[in-house]
Image 1 (cartoon, one colour):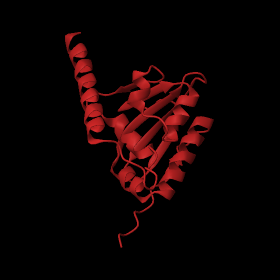
Image 2 (tube, rainbow, N blue to C red):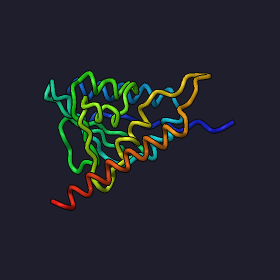
Image 3 (tube, helix red, strand yellow):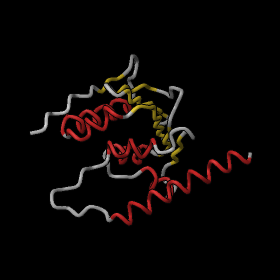
Image 4 (cartoon, helix red, strand yellow):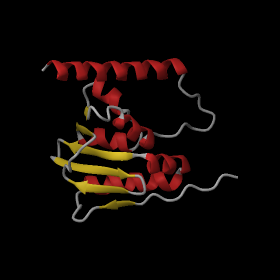
Length: 165
């Protein structure tokens, strides 16, 4: 039998009092308590993601530090990625019911990542997405490869535009 993955504490940084910070903390704590695979993934993640609910003018920064996750009110540089959208869109992401890239393509969210960490939003999505239900079919390899190719093409296009400017 495999050993249980150790806990990954999720804490609010000093002064973090916004509702968005509390909701992010609750979702992450619940998922990490329930799923050992997510705890293992959270321990490997390193970086900062800002989430902005533009309709409430509220931003939080989620810092993945391997051994723990810290949530700050406001934007805390340096950022590896940011996601901006309506509050309901961010909560769908937190619930694992939306993919940041798909929502970006649909124009519902604006996702940006640093050139050094272009796939960071997808790594965070892998932590937050809902696990497949018992007996559910997994997505076909072709869909996974098509999504990865699209992401790489978009990242290459962004890099080219930045290089040309």
